[in-house]
Image (spheres, rainbow over the protein chains, first blue to last red):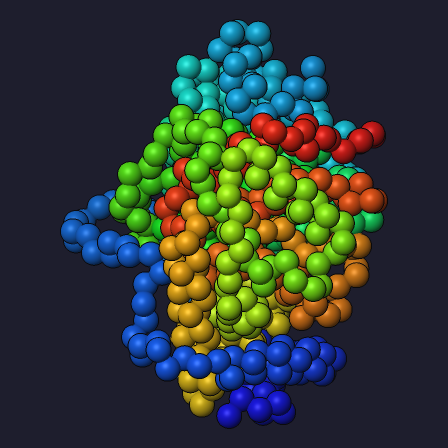
Length: 96
Length: 482
């Protein structure tokens, strides 16, 4: 696991919805191979004392009362939309 | 009158309350100085002088920060103003609301003025990842100012800002503060609301001040800190009156010197300045104790796996539909997203999204992301163990002075290593401060970092203030002409 050479930049870019030029793909493949090879040092760390569950860095109060409050108006929410019509965001066709 | 811009917050407060000067005079002085110097420095991306002037004309100088203009890193939302995060993908975006920190600044009479340059989406350690232009270091134009709060540090150092708000995910306030010779504070995780901060890595990001003095940092922090119901990670804890406890001194305090932070790889000038700072702190009555942070070597790896994973999720929202730049080529939807994002994001952002996507993907999650989270917990325990022995930790902020523009852009791993002393604090959720502690032979500023336990900003500022009072580094300003 996590060996050098497994990382496939084109696959990861597709998952991230990014299109890479051939030059970018070649460059990122090499640079991120280096980063991942550096990060392979973590495989050598003894983590047996750490529980599987995530431990909070600082205890925070994540729960609050569920109260209705005014939010952004539709007009304000749409103000930055590149394309909009009839109080809706316009999106590319999804269904044929 | 333009000299007014060189003053800090506390000095201007006094002058305002004595009616020696008025808020519009300060704003004009700042604006004039930006006009004279910023073409060269590139610290600002935009500013709205007319709006700020209208606010200055009605400012109440009896309020805590009444009439003081504060420059804002371009990833904190100020209603009606641009908020590009230094990215092409947010060109043309106007913030529909104020971030909580902005609402709080306004509540005490401060005036948000000017949008500061930065590495795109706060991803960078040099300012060179801005999609607009690289900011130059006011002390040496061929050097980087540090990053990602590049414009904030450069503007405060150059006196083109009275003070600024930046953000720190792995050192993005402290590292540029050190490289530009100003004070920067990364508050504890949860201390300052992130509502209205453009998210990079949600478990690491914090907003904090960049200022000319420790007193100014305390003044800003006591305004922006505190619980906010709009941020579910905001801590419910009282905010001390930071300025009231600054002068408590160092007597009886134990300061830890992490042995892993002062080993090889440190520039000799950084080492010399740090040794002198340690001697000064001892003279002031602090006891210096060597401590160990055994997982220091792993912190960069942990940081880049976790920060990129979170970034890949946070930046998924930039789809060109609801806000931001959209590709002109409206095609089938997957292609539309790919085009929008590939045209809008810069190189480093793409690189990090790809890395983050990979470490979260099926088959690799356990090997990278989960493993990094576990080592993160070990890093957190390192600090808990250290703080059982000492009150706070001290180290150089950066391993080298400001490097040359272009020096590290082609080697991301080398660039990432510039954050070796700063990013563990974000992983552990503790607070940190950088303040000026000397100069290299080329007259580049150097920073002393102080780290304190979560929610111990009062102690952090107290130590910083004692050191600042005993030294004159914070009075040094770069020679700027236009």
